[in-house]
Image (tube, rainbow, N blue to C red):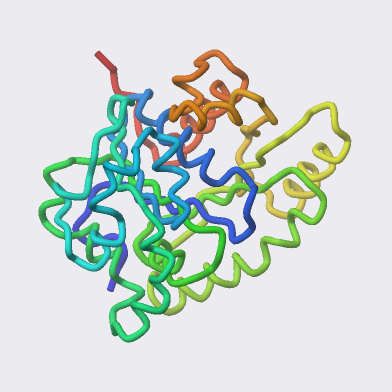
Length: 271
């Protein structure tokens, strides 16, 4: 089964099995930046912690229908997809219901293809999304595998710290396995360095090592360590809305342009 069937949106899984690397921050703010650049974006919160949902202002009372319901076919796209306060950015929120997915889905023969099928059902066409970003959990479990089977590409946030590159090996093996068994067209869209401090020699060394070992896979844009990026989720806003002119916001705008350039997508005029 090809992962490019019956969907025009570009599906990107944002994944790293290591926690605390800026994965959810990247998903939220890249989504907001793509939306700001005129793209119609859906964010799928596939992390049981639901941080992306919280960071986009989806309160618990608005999570009666979640990603889990969408995955198992208990909710249609129109029931599951919610608007956010950001123009052109929608979300399917998550709750801790997802934490039991590994156990509950183990007997399902199509357990690795649930998200693939959910995203390619005909009612999705009506939303005309340009991008679908999937915020994966910080583990290589059945949810992350679902994201990779459904996706066209993976973006890997890489924290600018010691041992950062060593943590990539298991993720690369998982991507290779998914490519060989379920989604032969899956590719790594890019690796984005996060929490980068230009004054710190370690950050510079991590960047040099990453570019030497991974070459063109590493995005030119680096995401700085920035207090506004850390503060924004507590206000249930992307940094681009919380402080549009912050260094973090500007960096995610640049990253969005790089992502679009790789996909040969032209900027749309936003009214």
